[in-house]
Amino acid sequence: METGTKAIIAAKEWGNFQVKQQKRPTAQRPQPILPPECAIIRSDAAWQTETMMAGLGWTINSLNRTSSFSVPEQAVRSPLTAEGLALREAVMMCKKLKIPKICCESDLMQLIQAVNSISTHSELYSIVADIHSCLSSFEFCIFRWIPRLGNLDADNLAKSALADAVVVMALT
Image 1 (cartoon, one colour):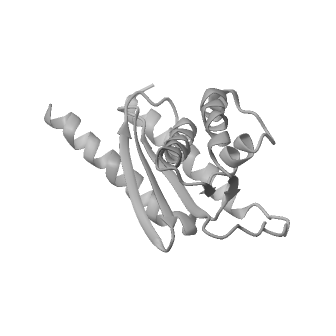
Image 2 (image 1 turned 90 degrees about the vertical axis):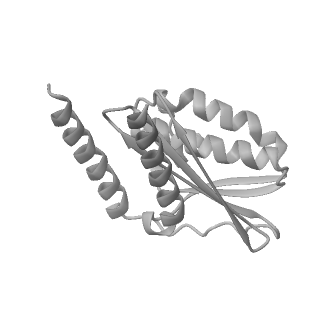
């Protein structure tokens, strides 16, 4: 199959997956009350089929201050893996910064379910294991789903990191 055709098919599948997640009816579960001084972490990823590159982006909102982070990543096999890597990087950054209380949010329900051990996805197994290995560093840590529109800053950071990486690759 031609590379362009593969890219179009993968993009449509990814888009359809995101739309299905947004339209899924959600049971009204009460959100847990976050402890004082809990940092809100939002992560997202952008992925390109042809180069198998991803842009990872995340924000850390702590004490009414938002910090933004993004990195490119090479040899990423799927959009799901990219999303997992973004969350892992965000959690590892919080550990490095010694942030004691975190609430991690993502617009990918499959990722949140995997981290919360509701469903295990083989593609995410080692990434989730890495995330779980960091959890003892925190006094409080929760993972929850947010709508895609609530994650636009992390989404833009991820897209920017990917675009910058693709430009650098093209120049070399």
